[in-house]
Length: 290
Length: 342
Image (cartoon, rainbow over the protein chains, first blue to last red):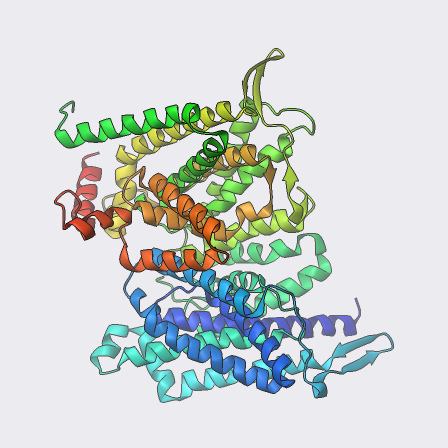
C-alpha cells in the first residue's frame, strides 16, 4: 500500500472518528452530568439526518438545514428533559434503559408519520461538492475534508467551554461531586436541562453532517448508538477527552480493519473493546474506581 | 419446613389451577391460539431467564436476545435440509452454546459495574448480531429456514415429533415447568441468597467472603443457557431464524416484560411476558402506529409502576399488607442474613 492510499484511509479514519466524537461526547456529557443512560441518543442522530433532509428539501440550503436541525433538536431536548428525563434522576438504571427504549419507539413512529420510511440522499452544499485530485485515478471529496475541519472545530469549542468557562466549571463540578456542587449553590435543575439539550443537539448535529456522505435511513440510529457506547466504554464514562480518544481509536480500527481484514472488520471494534476491558475496565481515561 | 400456612396453600392452589388451565387449553382452543400461547410461554421463559441476572442479581443485561438467537441459529445450522434434526443432540448443544457465550461475555462484562455493564453487554450482543448479519455463515441478513422441526427417534421409530402443534405445545409447557422449577431451586439455594446479597450490598457480601465475581458469572452463564432453551424452542416454532432475533430491541422488550412482571419473583416475568405480548396483539389489531402506543405505554409503566403490575392492585383498592411497595431494604437484610447462615 503506497503512501497516498494510506493517507486517504487515514483521512477517512479521522473523518469517521470526528463524527463519532460529536455523537459520543453528547452521550458521555449526559451521563456524566445527569447520571442518566440514554438509549434514545441514536434516535436523535437519525432524527437529525431526517431533519437535514427535510429542511434542505424545503429551503434548498444545507446551512439552513444544519442550523434548523440543531435548533429543533435542542428545543426537543429541553422539552424532553422537562417532561420525561427529570423523572429518571435517582431512579435505577433499569428504569432509565426502559424509559429511553420507550422513547425510541415513540421517536421512530413520529419519524414514520412525518417523513415516512424511505431512504433519502442529501446534497452537500454546492461550494463543498467537488473533490480534490490526488493522483490520476484517485480523488478525495472536499465535503469529507470539510467534515473533519468542522468537527474538529466543534470539538475544540466543546473543550474550550468545558475547561475555560464558568459553565464548564459547573459541568465539571457536577460530574466530580454533585452533592458538594449543590451545597455550594449550583442549581442543577437548569444545568441538567441545558446539558441534556446540548447532548441531543450534538447527536443530531452528527446525523446532519453525515447525511450528505451516507444515506438517510430509519435504522441509522441503532448502529450509531452501539458505536457511541463502545467509544464511551473505551474512553471512560463522563470523560469528553476519553470520548475523543475512543472515537479516534474506533475510526482507525474500523477504517484500517476494512482495508486489511475485510471479512472480520465488523467484529474488530468489539475485539478492541474486549481488550480494553481486560486491560482497564473503567476505560482508557476513566476513573479507576468505577 | 413442612408447615403449610394459608398464603402458601393459596400459592400452591393458584399454581395448580394455572397448570391445569394450560394443560386443558389445546383441547378447548383453536390451533391458532394454542400456537400464540406457546409463543408467549417461550418469551416468558426468556424473561424468567433474564430475570435471574436482572432481578435476583441486580445486573441489567442487554444481550440476552443474543443468547436466545444463538441457540436458534445452532438448531438451524445443525438441521439437515430435508430431514428432522435429532432433538436429543441439538437441544443440549444449542443450550450449551448459549451458556458458553454467556460465560465468555459475562467474564468480560462482569469486570464492569452499573452503566458500563449495560453498555458492554449491549455491545457484545450486537457483536453476535453483526456476526450473523454480515457474514455468510448462516444466510446473512436473510436468515435461514428450518424446514423440518426436530424429533426424537429411536431406531427409526419416531417417539416425539415437534412438527405436531399439540406435541410442540406440551413440549414447551414441560420445558417451562422445568425452567420454573430450576430457577426456584436456584433462587432459594445458598447460591441464590449469595447472589441476592451481592445485589443488595456488594461490599458487605464481599467482606463476608463470597466470591462475587464467580457467583455472578455462574448466574450469567446459567441465565444465558436458559435463554438458549427459549431460543431453541422459538426457532423450532417459527421454522426460521434471522439476525433480528439477536437484536438489542428484542433484549429491551424482554426487559420490559421483566419490569411489568416484577423483579423479585421467579414467575413474575412470565406474567409480564403474557401481558406485554397480549397487549401487542391487541394494539396491532387496532392501530396502524401501534409502536407509538406501545412506546408510550412502556414509558407510562416505567414512570408509574416501578414495581410492576402487582402495584395496580393496591393503587386501585388501597394498600394491601401483603404487597409492600418498597420491600427492598427488609429483603436486603434478609438475603444477607440467610446467605450468612448458608
